[in-house]
Length: 301
Image (cartoon, rainbow, N blue to C red):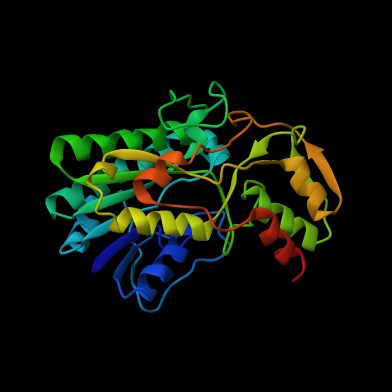
């Protein structure tokens, strides 16, 4: 991998991936329109090429794909509740935008596309631990559109011969996680509220469990997908999760500040817990960051 594109490369996960690629000497091109409202700031690596382009503008992004080896596609409308408020925007970005990325890669003979997907597609009908062969149960526009992106990736792999890998992220946390607004990921939100001496706002009864996965482990999964020589790995979907989960109430109690309960939200899963045997087998990935140890360090800063 000599030259790569990272869409959404100025955001939370994308910027961490860009830093790793640059560190490994990969010529890195970032496409990001910097529109994510949950980000208080965006992160720019001065050794990457940054383009403030919209992935829905096919003609504009197309020339950037020339002589690229790997595309890491992270740009998305990536929050459940905002997608419920504006399903048409989520569909445009997550379906049309993903198709544009795949088509631009295909016509430029890019070797592979690594697509960032979500565990939200498992919904409520599947009992944890969640496996990739379970039926989809999409509860909201976000999960519908992200699963549509997975289907596009499989189709481009099987019909057009463009190698694709889809990574289903479980609740990602860590360096640069968004903390802005009520729909920020729960750990970042709780830490912000705790440090501001505000009560942590627990949605519903707080007994919903989440598989918290560190961003550096997610970056490693992307890097392995971008460099694997295992031919059987392509055209596949993989869980990226630790296989351990904690309730939101447990999280608040571990942090130790005041908390309050707010109304439950529509369209959200009750429990997430990854079966990660497939990604271990095909991509030799292992989660390395312990959630509780990370949290202890954060609280001691």
